[in-house]
Length: 278
Image (cartoon, helix red, strand yellow):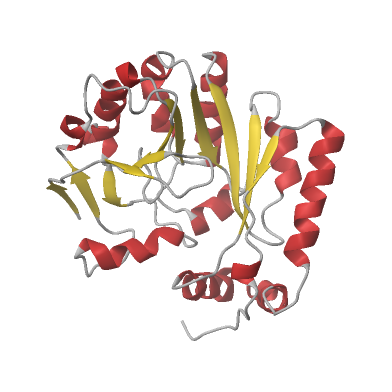
């Protein structure tokens, strides 16, 4: 379900480690990722539908970007934290594009993250920022896996093509390898396949907090039953899997001269992942 709504504000202060402000042009998301941490937003939306089945378009959002202000100059501004700014409704409504147009004279350090190749459409806007980076989430290079975990997002091929085009246009880009799915996400292979046209690699481990746990469990049981016991062990209290993975990433990137950032959260994932009824 897609509907238009009006909102009172659009630029909010951010608690993210690398962002001063954040903009979310939509409520909800159409990508239907099984691991989506933003499911908690449903409780604030007024929707009873399944997360991933609705998107509210903030139709007046561009009009809320202030003019003639220096407040955001050289500040890190991120699109988006709890939606995909280029989810499918953007093709018709263009809220994200109009927002970025309004941001150009405010001169923030813009960062955009998406799973959609539609982002290439706005290359003409990105090049007008003194500081701009565009990131693409890539959880696996296996298209069959992509269809399981991100069924409505762009294909792997289209995402990599978008990154190449951004690179050719001189726009700094990055791949967000997250969440890392144990024994599924081959992060070294992703780096090796893309480092010729990607500037930076970011990493996050799989967070099973809240309702994400149920959806991950159901996916494992249906698509990868052989991994159920292994995931249960990884998320048992005191397991060092993620610390070992973090150390491996640091060592590999240092040895290979790869620019990287880590966004791991160990303590929040140190609880049992026990298979629940689907």
